[in-house]
Length: 151
Image 1 (cartoon, rainbow, N blue to C red):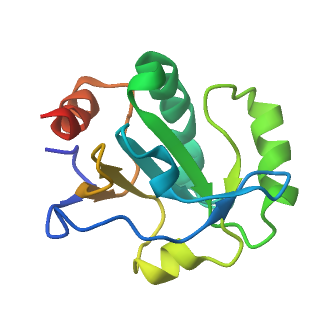
Image 2: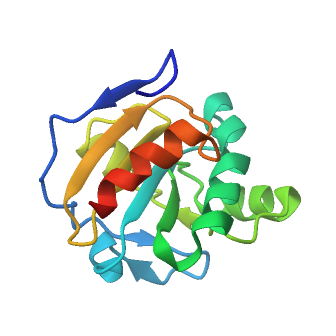
């Protein structure tokens, strides 16, 4: 169970990941399907969202801990895209997570997601669960939830 204040939703379990594209700072586009074969933790966030910014260091710690065993995708929903996200990442010193952007807001609008929302996909690109609200991704509760993608 997620900590108080977060909402765990399993109603989309088994649904395929959307084919929405997101971009790196240079504009190179990718989709979740690019990571098939590896579980993906997709975090939708924005620089103006205080709970999002609060949980970002724990996503960095999670990405460092999991290495190649889990792809942590932090996809900004800032309309300014890289102009806001890249300086934020640089100032924070993040190295294990990348400043992906979705300036068209396809994820938050298409999935009806409030920020922050984090969705776990298994190695086949099927949803396991989604959590709305900030969480300590470096903690034991998050580790147990992420383990669900592996078995």
